[in-house]
Amino acid sequence: MNIRTVIFDRDNTLLYFEPHALEAFGAQITIVAPHLSLDSVLAVWSNWPGPWPRDSAEESAFWRHFWNSATEGCDLDDGQINALCDIGATYYTCFATFDDTATCLQALQTVGMRLALLTNFELPSIERTLEHVGVDPGLFALVASQTTLGVRKPDPRAFYAVADMLGESLEYCAVVDDCSDNVNAARSLGMRAFLIDRNRSTHDFANDQLASLEPLPSLLLDSPGDKGRHPLRSDVTSYDMLS
Image (cartoon, rainbow, N blue to C red; front, side, top):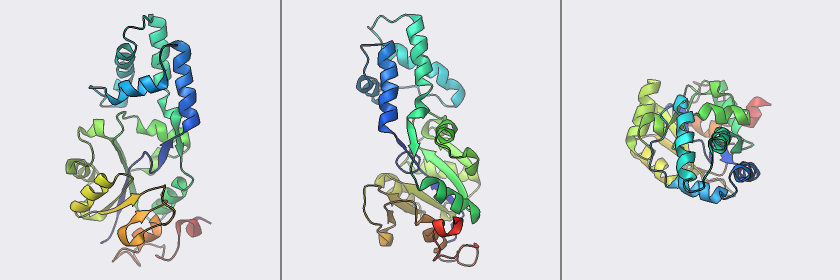
């Protein structure tokens, strides 16, 4: 199988919510609205019935709708709601990147792999989160959220939609995700899919289960038919390549 495109999940795969940044985000909210805690805001988020913004341009209106609902009964004035909207719009500052993310992405791009990002996160401003952590959004041929597509993983339609937008067949795409349901769904469609679990201490190569992204370029280039097509041999790691 010649893998030509790698479709990454974002959260807990390439990026993660940084605890100290989340704490600072919550502190800003509490300064404006003392009765609101980060936990209470996250509870409203988790139970939010929608609608979610379909593109970045709709996020400003979304935040106003969200904060009006989250603060119902708190007797906040327009100035406080505006301040909360401004804080919400900086949600991307809560993200950080794993140490192996940039190296892996650069290694794959260097050998001619196309990269895509598909996340179930509700806000479509994915590029903003990447830019914040120092990952160039231009590395990706496509970035898509479930709200942009109108369907979320593990629904097979999410993978079909991304492949169609890329003009690629599923058999030439690999998936990297931290959710086993998403990985199993991709495999059921005939895609090669890697489950990344950053709590693991070792890789399980036989089952395409990874503890980090470090071996991914070599594993993809070791796929049947790939040797010789890319300038990177399968016994060379991403770190060797970029040194």
